[in-house]
Length: 104
Image (cartoon, rainbow, N blue to C red; front, side, top):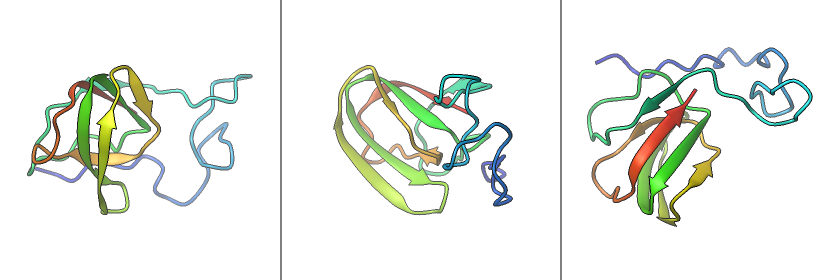
């Protein structure tokens, strides 16, 4: 399986971006996604694209591999949380949260 593609890895700011490099919805100052995909946690398979954020629909822990390759555990994430994180994979090991959506 190919590694997740980071659409903004060139180091150049994304079009209409703020200082963080995230695309901004015109006039809102908030990042906007252009696609979304349901996440199936896996210890071996990357997401198709690096996320802009991760929506967690069912409460629990999320173990994610970040865009820079580091692994981090987000503990006790409440249902309905939008994590503004750029992840390439959500690991099955250590993840108990459900109904996750990666927004790119």
